[in-house]
Image (cartoon, rainbow, N blue to C red; front, side):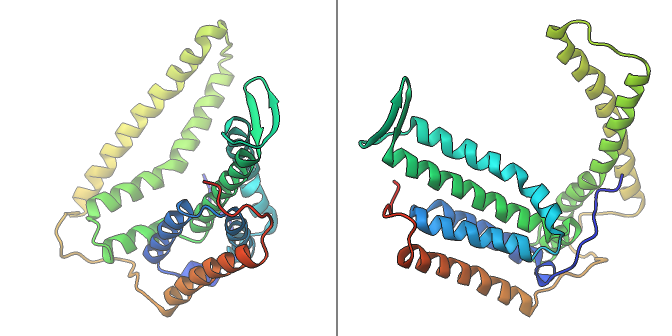
Length: 264
């Protein structure tokens, strides 16, 4: 099954995956400690702008990928808005209690979820899994047995999806019908999970045998087909992250959307 799509390579694709992963984790930590809703709005807008312009994917595909973000924003924000605490009541009906404080906490939480989701999608769209694990092995000294295990698991996902579709078509041809709504979910789960699990175990065993036959070992001295190195693009990437944080902080204080500056 073909799961890759054509895209235009940008300078973000040439950034060292290890550096990109470290920067994404650092950005996530900074977002957790950002309590100014205005700064969070600007930071989220800047991240989404980078997602739209720098991934090299068509706009329609990006909009398709980001369509669940609206659900993430609504589900994250409304829960905090309707059931949060506060002293300035805007609306009350039963257990629903919307206050000024809970409203802005909800907005802040929604934008925080959007920002984290955008960074994750930006990372996944501009990073090849093979390059990421080779970078982890070469620069971060991750043991090859763990890195190659994850790579092998990623390679098996398209095959697993294809087997699931084949199994679904086979069951449909055989005319399987739902007899009892209460037990149908368990029957369906058993009919799909047991064959897929059995095939996965067989495939994992064959992969392990093939790797041992090719003299795969856990020794420290080993060669790599791909060589991932640091480059000046990594510095530009780090400076871009710093510039995004600085502009978001300045705009959040100079051009605020609301007078609320701390939602804690």
